[in-house]
Image 1 (spheres, rainbow, N blue to C red):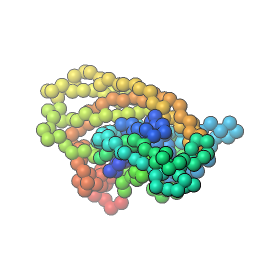
Image 2 (cartoon, rainbow, N blue to C red):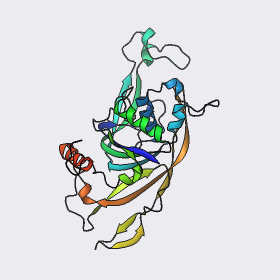
Image 3 (cartoon, one colour):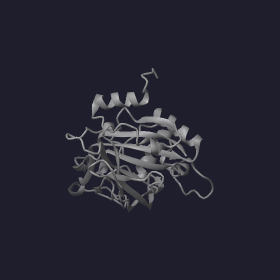
Image 4 (cartoon, one colour):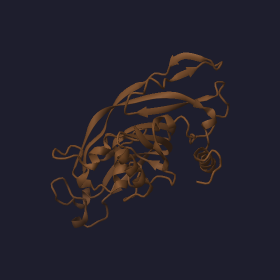
Length: 284
């Protein structure tokens, strides 16, 4: 496996997992559909070609579904609800069409929807590819995107620091070394570690066991439990009028990371990233 690491942070993110009609939810972390969509947008794959089950040939979009993501939750953020309206105030010939193709009357022109977002959330995402050529092609696309990337919805652009590291042999292992976009705890824990949540679309490897430490700092010999849930976010087709997803397992656990990785916000975090990328202070 080879790949790269992304940093997803912005005032607003929204990762819909079972959105329908006038209720638009957000998952607590980036979805596979959202992450693959981000890369597809950067690569310039049009909606008409966002098909993973083409019977005659393998599409570029289908190759994106071979990527494996491991998500580190730096900051979970807070869920915010938005009372959203669309379509009001227009003459009838400009109102939102109905399912039958007609136009809505004045009394039904305004559509009200509930939309949810994550505020002040930050995630560091390892993307692992079985194909080195595809990994490099996607990394170049993220650095110079064809269409602007977004964090779940087009109204949620990412921060400037999006692509952290490329050409990594083990992107998921790098998540244990990259600075955390969170403040250090007010009272340093006696273990010298902080618990960090991880989400993966694959089982966590046994060679990287999760170990909780006792209050004395000694190995307690207990592995943190792994929770397996089912999410309906594996994209099959994301065309304009035919969006199909499959369900897949999501593996969640917590792991202790050194408290020194907590780098804070803003310029403090950027300084920590600069030191991480150039530990000897070398000019990139």
